Length: 126
Image 1 (cartoon, rainbow, N blue to C red):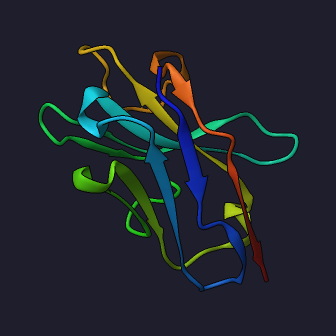
Image 2 (cartoon, helix red, strand yellow; image 1 turned 90 degrees about the vertical axis):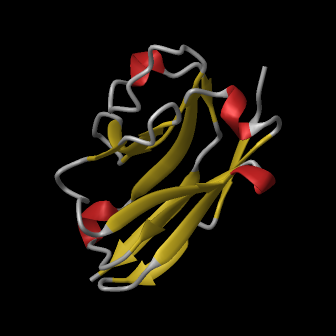
C-alpha cells in the first residue's frame, strides 16, 4: 500500500505558474510509474503527464506539452508537476497516481495506476 498526498494547488491568473507536489508514503522507486491526471467538472479524467522509472521516459498530453514538466525527488519521495503559462482551460482537480506493475507505460491510461491521491484544485482565471 502507498498513500499519495498532493499539494500546491491554488488560484492564479492566466499566464501564471504553479508547482504541484505529490508525496508518497513509501520509497518512490518502489513504484514503476508516476503520473498526474486532471478532471474538470463535467469532463472525463485526463492524463496530463507521466514518468516511467526504468528508463525515465516521460509522457505529456498534447494540451500541456511545452508548458508542464514532471519531475521527481527520490530522497523526498515526491513527484512534481511544474505548470507554466497556465490557461483557464487548465482549471481542474489534479490527481497524482502511482503504478506498481513493471510493465506500466507512464502514459495516460488510468487503468494501469493502482494508487491515487485525493487531489488538489487548480483554478486559472482569465
